[in-house]
Length: 286
Ligand SMILES: Nc1ncnc2c1ncn2[C@@H]1O[C@H](COP(=O)(O)OP(=O)(O)OP(=O)(O)O)[C@@H](O)[C@H]1O
Image (cartoon, rainbow, N blue to C red):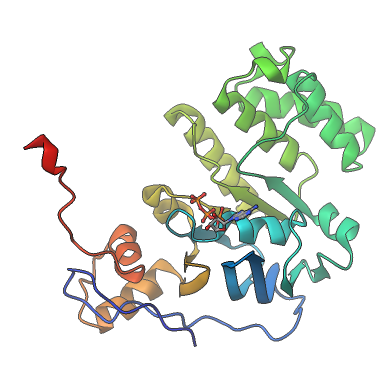
């Protein structure tokens, strides 16, 4: 069991929520995503420190943590974009770093910083992604047009990506990430830069995907969204997984420690990462 950092929050419930989740010992194929002793070091910085995580098929897993906690580094290692210093990752039972092509075919990825084909139009880009993932020719056109429609990109479908707004880029990238109906979808900050209307559309699509069996692993700073969407949550702080469970479990564990049984995810998050209720006023504004 992993322990949380020393509680030093002003909330009256402590100790902070502790990690009670599974510590996977093998690439169990009954899990959609497994990490075992995953480590990534950048020079002296231990960005991800011995991460053990197991996500079940069909789960909507929210990955939370403060800035610099190690969320993007973890996701990059999970999807084959960044080689771990040590440890393993399996997606759909496939070792991501031993069988990268096989693993990539099972997943869709929406990275934090979108590196898109700027000289393609939105329509071309989504179609291209369908070809890359080997979607049947007959399905590519149908799926592309439907994605453009649902994501409200039809009127801009022939515009070059380079001329897209932040939100439009994100929606095009999401379409490209799901056109092959991936088993597991990784999303790094999918709602950043997205307006409320598009946010609603994306939430509905993600919900629909999980209802049909897709596993979603996503990072976000937006607690309300995580609270509304996720079936399970993991909280990482300074590279270490400090809490993991369903919201109900996290609340119950917290309330077992004298916490408010109605604690919000934000309350739990702040407590787990050990935020003090300090004075945040700027002295020079007095
Ligand atoms: N390529 C890199 N070279 C050196 N250090 C890096 C590199 N990438 C990440 N880091 C460091 O690793 C730590 C974790 O970064 P990461 O981007 O994973 O955090 P994060 O949780 O995604 O943060 P945020 O919420 O701010 O996006 C940080 O200290 C960061 O500076």
